[in-house]
Length: 338
Image (cartoon, rainbow, N blue to C red; front, side):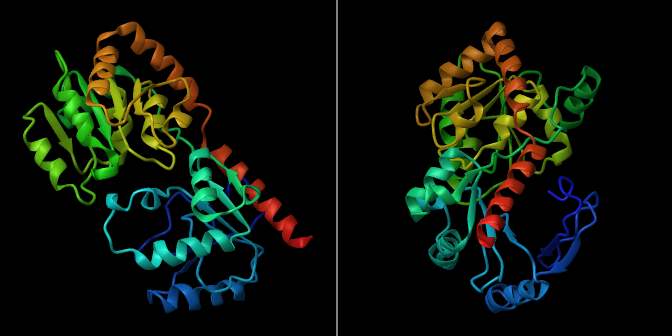
């Protein structure tokens, strides 16, 4: 956003221990108050009012409870916890029961990262559709097809198998890795499976399931993010079986790298991939088995998915997201001045 409008002065409040990005544009950085409730919800809004800002932006979907003294725009990425609380730890009553609902109802404008998330905002919190704008997320340009020399080095460095199916996500219940594991275990002439992602919460049953599946399942828990484009490039197919996503970046990142993609038929995923991926029943191991066998065994299908995926991913960029976000601010400021 700062790059899109260099004439706008921006102040970014950072939590304790978080340093400004090295390659960031020249912005003003200030520390967030450290006291959990009084600091965040009383002292912080007082500091915001002192700045006499034209607008407040909550990119994580939250506002402080105190008055910020200017029009506010927030971005909602994910409302999964309101769709199924059993997917999450039960220690967030203040945030989920009070802060998030108040933020959504007080904000002058709400940005949703997908049409599915926009529908959730409207249905769960009674936010009028007139205050919601969909601004899709973007794909970083570092995700693109790589050359053979780069890929050979990455394969050796990461000890990746010659043929593998890829899963990229935190390992937790709503990511539905268990269904994928069942479908993969039933495959004929199955490739290896590479799981990239750390442990989230309530992962113990999934971990036990993974341990029973033998050495052809590879878990890369602490992968350096700089290695991820090469891993996407090397995979036969990305499988993304999540029960719920607010948007779903891994499928787009994989498509940008020229990797065929299979996603579940839930939440935002069909909307994001369009006709450039295979969409299957999220809860059916048999459906996942069939789709995985088709893509990994049919070179023509895989080539067509690669072509369509690259074209689809090219529709999403952070530059476009920034431009659309600024339009929301322009509208909110115009409405406040009227």
